[in-house]
Image (cartoon, rainbow, N blue to C red; front, side, top):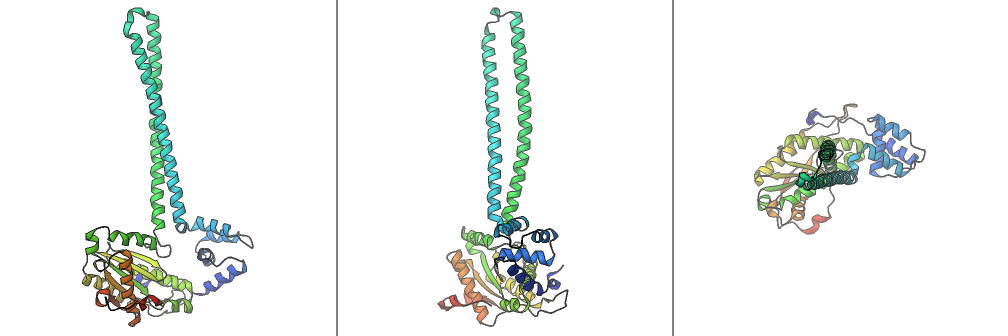
Length: 356
């Protein structure tokens, strides 16, 4: 499905139903609770719907959090990652114990060889019967050691496979912890790490830029059509962002209706062209409901650009790009502003603005 023709799949009526149901059950109006009831009542997840139906008339927060952990693991990323790390640590300790046991077994076998070799140094004092007993004991010890070695090798192979499985799960959990659950692009946590990386090298400072984007009048969209429609619009915008930029660009949803792009290896003019192309594509995209045919009107974004070389730190870079974004907002919205065209002329009053 192409972003430009992607429909709004749900109407706003479900929002009021969700709120009414939560109030009736005495459920706290937390975002994670809203998501549970929204998905359950929309019927998009049958198992989740059954889990919600099985709740008591006055469900506890612990019961709801249990459902959340089961069906929305991406919202519990840090805890899951920590659990996976503990599993890795346990697997490594098991392997270490196995290797220590193997070392002890080999050392014991070595002592048997040394003692036997020493005892055989004067064969003239040993009878043929005793020599046969010693040979039998050595054969048994060697056979036992070989069997033990094969068992250890098999166990190590199993442990290694288990460890690889746990490591794979850990990487997946880490990815989920850095992924925005609504849009499936990078989240603020991942963005904070990526923008910090820019200032780890001179190359990063010289050849990187930050673009901040904000959906215009998004509060009006939510107020008029409901949060489910607003969520779907955010998803479509994110799809457009991902499909219309270079594959190597870092795209993140940094909060609400706000997005960020980190551009590498581009001049300010090229960065501006990227932002302007995205802005035009959003403006030209129809946002309509596939169920009702309702047209939600034109959706636009305002954007601000700052080159990394114009800032002293990640925080300064974000602040200056945000200033440029604010200038786009107060200048009429649906436009791209470069920080370089306004540097030194913006007062501190921009800190007080409220995006809409």
